[in-house]
Length: 274
Image (cartoon, rainbow, N blue to C red; front, top):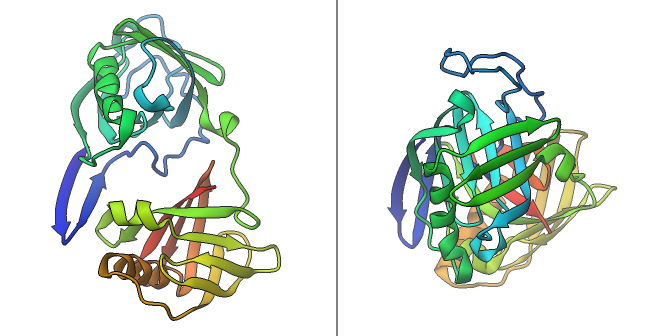
């Protein structure tokens, strides 16, 4: 995974190419039962390969994840994406000799508060140790660096939340060439709720939102109005981006507790269920 960092005032733009851990991975795919790795080399003994799936930790024996985790791991297109509660990590992955081997590991560079600061070191230690792996149905077990982690398929551990009737918190902004996370977004916590009748409520960051979202399934059309308060420049910048993403036709996809909205105008949002 390559990481592109672009500073725009106080906001860090993160352009993640490849697989991201709290990403939009296709975790609904079944395990591949071929006896080859993604590089085409045979896996001694064969066994199911977790490619095309996302797993979330349910138990850690040994050193716990600083900040509590959980550890989320996505396998897709020969790559791994991992997140233990702070930054997103990614690289190429193979499954040789029952060892999970990651190469070219890179990560985003967000500062994390409190105990979560140690989550990146914990995760790097696990992946650098080339842990053993085993898939048993919906469960994945990784063992290495004196830690045993039990993970469950995300589709089982966290079934998809309904778009309507759920309160969603904005965690990131999407532009045509970047995903944006910033302290301002985390501080103001813009929210979005779509009622069963299509009524929209929430906060764009500074002002309250009211409006409608018409359509069914993944295709929605937003019409949003707001109150007229003024806040600081960083907050208003976030608000303008949120409102641009909620202007007109939007494609909505849900992966467990993560909602991704992509507008036909090129903007979008990532949101997490409250």
